[in-house]
Amino acid sequence: MKNKKTIYNSDEFRKTVRCLTEKIREADELEFVDVEKSFQDVMKRVEREKRVSYRRHIYRWSLSIAAAIGLILAMNWWSTNADEGTELDIALLNDTTSICGDEVILITDNQAMNLKNDASLKYDTLGSSNIQQYALNTKISQASSVKNEMHQIMVPNGKRADITFSDGTRIYINSGSKVIYPDIFEEQKREILVEGEVYLDVAKRKDCPFVVKTREFDIRVLGTSFNVCAYREDEASSVVLVHGSVEVTTENKSKVRLAPNQLVDIKGNKTQVRKVDVSEYISWKDNLLLLHQRPVGDVLKKLERYYGCKIRYDAEITTLSLSGKLDLQTDITDVMDNLCLSLSLHYTINDKDEIYVSLK
Image 1: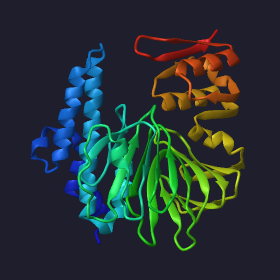
Image 2: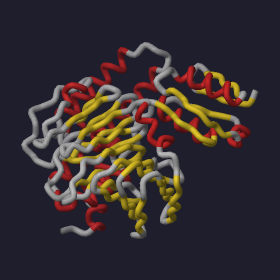
Image 3: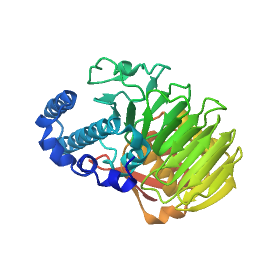
């Protein structure tokens, strides 16, 4: 087996994660016909766009295709280097292009496709799925005969999705998140990779733990429900346990075991455990924000991700905190109306749909 240094320095890997622009220019040389077709479909869609933000849309969709091409190449490389799968998956999570575009993207072994918002994917024990039901612009080719094919779902700000894996485990994926997972779990291995925020209801199997890997820590469970928040841009990550038991292992191999209604904050190799009201941390999956003395800056960041909009605010309001409930099934303007009314704040929306919040 190759060592980690060999994997990270391989020519194919470097081309995948660091030369996406070059790969787009060389698209006609790729073996993946679906990528070229997807690119043409996207450009036709851009040409139909009549709004003033024409160039901004071209840039956004180009980024989406760049991500798709890079990820397909990486997935294909993984399939020919299966014995190095775990290390490569971690590299993918660390080094691929950031989540971009306006729609949910699903990457399979040889395809990239856009999915409807709130897509609810289901995989059976044979790896068959209902992907076609939610695909927007790609005809799904005949199912691959390769078992344990790796998939990756990228959920941009303003969108959400959920997946029922082949073992019956269900994962809810929040805005600005991505998950790497196999279409079929191996008999003695259930493992996924996560960046962003997810809630999992893990199917119980005493003989096979379920492992969630992030850039900074791993979570090992047998059957339980918990929330993971591990956004790349946030200073700290967290795990909240609803019921059951989980064990969190940090980069320096220190372990923390959580009991129900406990949260562990993770910042580098430092951890802090405290008791919490778990409903505050999992309400997002039900389109709600339940808040108890939460800093306004944190609340606005959550709203920015959830609705996929830009929210800026005066530094003075960071000293304020908010308690109560926000209904996220309503329009962002309704949410901002309620928030500002509660705290005597004022907000405006400019011609770029950016929100600015200030003291009255």
